[in-house]
Length: 128
Image (cartoon, rainbow, N blue to C red):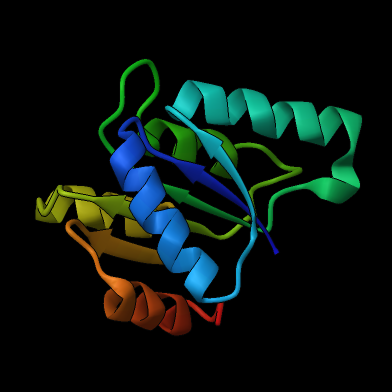
């Protein structure tokens, strides 16, 4: 499974990557914000569509392009709108959570997260 991990904080990317590795996922590409993630997605889509990401795990609050903006862009793109998307964020506002659910996010992980929480959410989302 190819995973795109998006977070502007290196420590959060490192923590999530470690958990994903422990869960058996090793093909992980990282991006520092939604804009870089969107660029990587488009690059793969146009140059090697067989290597598209199977899962996106993204923070919400990032400079240049937020996780919510990235989610909207993906859901509005016919070729990639079905890619499973997990939001990992500190935002607990009900309206934001409902918006991500409306856009088809598979799971919503509240930071700080740990191995059991990520494992549970991935199982709940049908990824594990």
